[in-house]
Length: 390
Image (cartoon, rainbow, N blue to C red):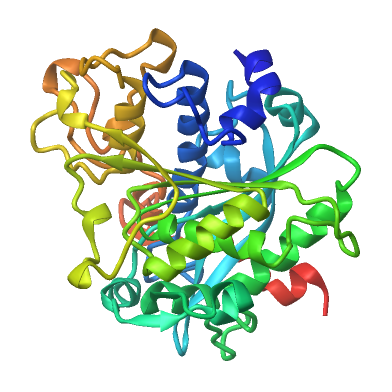
């Protein structure tokens, strides 16, 4: 498996626009997509959602333990290390951890066939983020695309999360966009003499941000070593369950970047998921990239009330996708992640529902006298200024 992906990575990343790989779904591509959606899930699973914690809205885990704590270290051949956390200003005085930048280790490079730089964005969690999601008015994207997108317009809420700053917070003195740009540029420069790719992933709101980010990287040459005008490393995005991001001029920007800037986007859509159908706004909004449609209602393992937008349901749907309309899980792809955050598997599966308990009872610890006490052991990462140096 590993050696096959190592030799086919460029094709699996869309170098030939996934020609003859989607229908039927190539098994290597199936593994490949699930791999990237798992890294998208990691961005969500590390979020500290305990309001009483001093680390609220930040990452629960330090970079050196991050993937082990989210369950992606044991027996996982795709090895990465986190280099930077990404923070976004979701309000004038609110900053939140929104994902991470990572790079393949030497071990991971051997399996993946190149040094992959990974950017992962999480989906909506806080109330202010839901309000950003609801801000569907279009806004010019010229600040992202310059002359490529003079007329392009994108979702105001998504653009705000991506580009806004909150100077009162040490985490968002620079925007999420600028944090990612700096982190990527440093890695591209460091590994410029190797075979390199930049892969961006995310689910839901994270998928919309991944789309913006991938196009931004390609448009502005962040996939090139500093001072080089010739080498442009491949930029790939695997957004799942993504809402629409921009208008038809935005789509024209994508087409131009795909042809000129080595950009490739494959959107994964569950047929009964409503999120990819919004916003509509009289048909002004549109999608970009190639589409891979799945249908989780075909699975004999899921309950009928399983949320079709659930990220683990997406992975389950990809794992069982068959061209003839049947659902069949390959043995090596048979996993029980579908109920990490739901009760979506049939009871006869004998898998406990909502089994992912990342915060260990939200840090409530029973003392020797029988009383329960909140023990705040949250990791609080350094702000970006400390990561990068002043």
